[in-house]
Picture 1 (tube, rainbow, N blue to C red):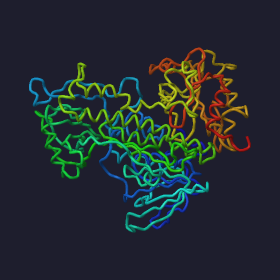
Picture 2 (picture 1 turned 135 degrees about the vertical axis):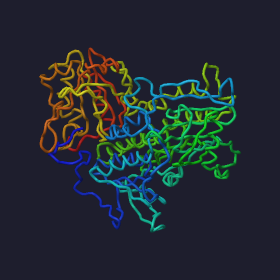
Picture 3 (picture 1 turned 90 degrees about the vertical axis):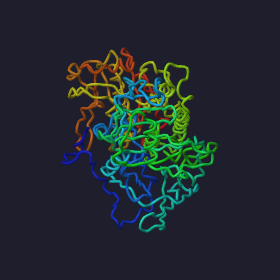
Length: 638
């Protein structure tokens, strides 16, 4: 973490210097009349987006929520490894790691062949495959995740806070103007219930759940089906003789249904998803009047011969499994050549069962994809056409989610005779879980070729950094201070692109990596200089990092190009943290781990949302320029 760039300032370094003008949130302060982005909903998707946009002092962001304040308990709890990587960019991954339960093993239980009325353990599997991520799969209260995002917002330059007790009633888009063309009618749901306020926005993002008013206002609908199966979920403090209560467990009984056990943070709390009754085709769970006691009774039947003695039910809910997806994630029909103004994210555009643990994760990945694009457009760095890529990229991933979860939910709810075996030597639900581990970890996302995702012409230069997939971090040593660290952890949720330049066998003056650095720093037509504005630091738009094959002590006295040791900030202080080398201390060789070509090296171009956009030779200056010119506009005057 770097700070003091613009001068010494005591206190918490996570609290960024305040913007020269930021909004007051006093009890009697009026709502703004105009904003750049209005976000509807303080769920994971909305808060993730707000936390990103709050970093930009020149972007006026507003987030509204009909509830009177933040949630305190319940709802989602799973944070997959991909989301943990994203949390690292926001600066609170270590907090989550410290407070959460780590899912290390998953145990499988099914009817005991000797006594089918009882369950017995049939196997275990490592929950996070070896080498798939440096991050753990964690479980933590969704309310705590919200709190961490709220803290990032509050500490950001614009000191962003939600406007609680306000929800979107309706919105209208005026196609005749580019000046705040979205008129939003907000309705008060608190003390002054029914009062309305009109706000004009450049963009609106509906993160307002499955009954989204934003989605409805642009004619969006959720299409799909329901499994007509009632499930209950409860967070409980309880005693039990079940031996795996502190491990994630999938349990299927012979006649009484299934259970998913998820231990929670704190060492005592755990969550149980309990299968209840099959519903009739036209029946809803609300008509059955299920209670927490029904779940506890069902759990004791399913877990025989083990019992559970519940001391406190912290939170519980009953739900029906459904899988629904909207046809688009923005206001523009596919057959129209228009740039979108209104977007949806999270449950507003896809709903599914909670047992795969993907709802909160995919919702945040939706808005993490959108946030940097909105920032680039609003700052005039990209044409608004860039925003078309949001629906194109995220709809495909949501469809994959719905299809995978549809299959998984039906396996978990299948009758015992159907769910036991599929011709393999293990139960179907166990095999399916293992097959889905990449998906469950959030690591199956691969964006197709587009303006933001280059061709695989040079993929062989770094096979472990697959174009279209997230940047798979690996250990390095920072040369300046011999610090062992993960290379991917240099990336922050700040809207900047990254170029990781891996040096080849020749890495001294006159080598390809030096020539790349000199071009980026000194050529007015380079992708660094072309997009920079007056008085911006050289790394304000594109952050270059270099990785060498020598040990750090062999590099300490080497002269490096200025762009790798730039002078930045108001005081013109030199940055010493852009140069890395292979970790010779035993954590792993990044060149070997990620298949980087040792002889010629390469550059890996990474988007602000941590996905690999391109892999290119170090001397492919023109190819890099053509690729990024498809996304960026030249800075004025260049």
